[in-house]
Amino acid sequence: MPKLSIINSLRRRWKRPISSFQVKPSSVLSMREGEAVILTYSSATDKMMVFSAFIREGLESGDAVWYSYPDEESETVRAKLKEHGIDVEKYEKNGALYLESEIEGFMSNGKMDYNKAVVDGLNWWAESKRKGYKHIRDIEDVGDFSFVNGQWQKYITEYWLDPRWEDPNVSDWVKSREPVGVVYDPLLMEITAINVEHMTETQITEILKAFGEGNRTPARFIDLLKDTTLFSKSIGLDHEGLTGRKILLEFDPISDYEKAVHNLAKESTANVEPVFVFTSKTSSVYSCLAEESGIKFFLSSISTSIPKSTSENTVLIPANNMSLILDATNKVLENSGDANVCFVFDILSELLTSVGQEKTYLFLQHALEMLSSKKTTALFLFNPSAHEPQVVSSLKNLFGNQLVYGKNGLDVVKTS
Image (cartoon, rainbow, N blue to C red; front, side):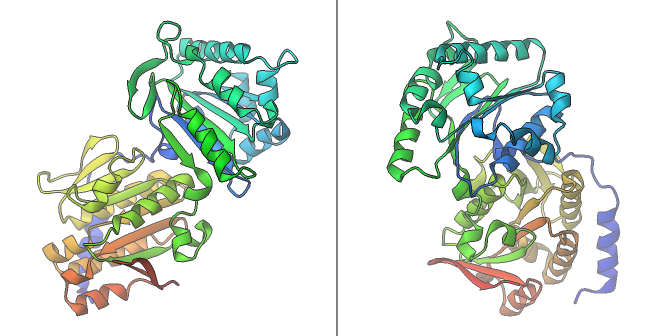
């Protein structure tokens, strides 16, 4: 057990203001500026939680939002948006929020008119840009394509792949083109959502392949149904059962344990929960997650004596400074309000080696106390082969939830 003087010293240090760096939650669905995403869902997923968070984030930060939805949801959409904290009447009145059913958008003249739908969309984009909105967030929920009598091929070829969306000779929306697909002007962020509940795997594959044809290809595909339980399902839980747990993950360094962390990050993102990772730039975890734009990293560094933001998603933290790690954690919790949050701590072995068992144990006590909320999920990574058995046993006693990742993958030791 750590000495009382050490405990009091660390408590005093992390409670006082140490630094002024800012930590903001990641964008919903980790969407980049200028990105086009194809999202699949079913009735088993809470799509309105995701859509509402994306819409609310945009409206509160000065974006304009266009949201079209299946006709059968016309009576419930506004109620759901209000349920998730959006003042629908206020934003509709000031023009920041535009809501319409797919039938209203594509059959405003009583018959299917893809040309008019494209023109209306481009005109709304242009008007929103003229008014000075920071971004345009476009969510088009096509459901199961019932509004086009299931003729999704025609919708894709005549509307989604219409060259006017991206032709520089017609439209000024395309900024650059990359191998992953179209990258719009940073003003635009676009989601096309599809209900695949009653579709076969073959049908789903054909639809997604069709979206990837032509010049206007999406930058990413998101399977909301799969991702919402990607990690929790592997340990016998659902996402609700996972939320709020503090978990010790013992790993074999020669295994692909970073995949488990990646799955946790994807699940948290799909459930609109920001992800914060404490690790080093040389770790397998960082290499695996570095391309995930929405994840926030705190990277231990020997080149800085104070926390230093190096990009929107990265803060350098002085190596082995437990007070500053706790301070950064506290800042995240303060800025996250009542939202669920996910943490990954890939630093235990580093701390044990540099500051010793006593101080590392003390750090864990404070961290677990700070993260005690049922809205905060935390995964602590630990390489037991690098430490003495008594050290391993001491740390394990702090956790009611323990996992092991070895050559055969992920196994559950115990859950509280």
